[in-house]
Length: 414
Image (cartoon, rainbow, N blue to C red; front, top):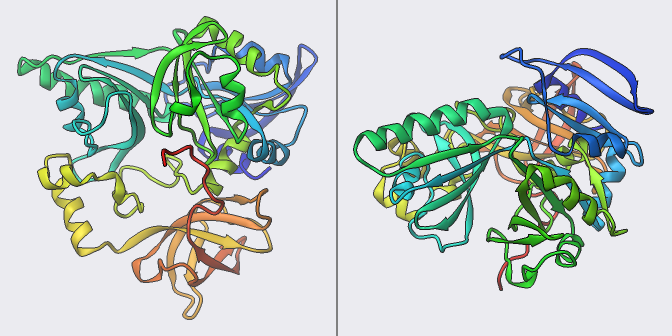
């Protein structure tokens, strides 16, 4: 169960209660919650219970870690060879309108929205004034006066406040920016991921999937339901995220599950898939103390924005691009032994000196052995560098490896 330990660290207390509900075994973990609020149900909660989902409190939402029909590893491998549906309704969906919405968004992110085509999407980051990453997110340029944003559930309150405060500054200057946060009771969001995902969706939609390339977005119908379909995901595989009215999420999901090529998958497989794909988890691999350059995400700083140098933390980030950094996020591979978990110390193999730490790690169902990512001294970032990782008080050999660990299969325009 490679992902569960890291998920528990981030989101849960140590006590685990196993109970029976509606004849289905549900693993309920008491979550750490700063607000003390009861966890929210996503629009697919009843469906998770119906299909044997082992539900936990994750970032304030009740979501399945796995389902009773397959292990986390089996679910992971099924996604790589076929297609899986992940409930990602906990993510914050935001709709922004106004003739100044692009200027506002570029004031808080380093993305070149002005240069993006209508209907295209981009991964980007909210930055603080020190160049630290407030959150990572995907923004879609619906048109020149409308944006659609999907950001992390674990940063939901932070992101809301950040967008409200910065847009209010714009409005006080007479600018036209209006933000609408969609509650989980208003909109559902599912990710359909894997090599057979597009075909499964195509059988139910009027959108031409052959014309919907990676990081593009369209509005159409899926199973007769009005939806926004965006070609993206968090697994390294081809796939889409589908946003629809909360009340229709179950209908769309059930329609997709009629295919033998599609199964439900939970948080466990989602975590191991994203790690094999070399994708960051906010709060583990990136946070407000880390810049995009240190996180090996320099490509997020678009060339036009580097020239403009008018995004938060621009001076610090541009100096790092030019002059380098002291630490860098890297991939780590271990052929045998126990997996390296978050905060495990990384050491120079020759001197034994501590040179960094692991931020995410788990067994790799696709490759065998274990994969991880973490930060090391800049001089040790090169693929092939021998390191040691301290696991349960003992040093084990590991190797810096290029990410992604498994090839990506995004549907890109050739």
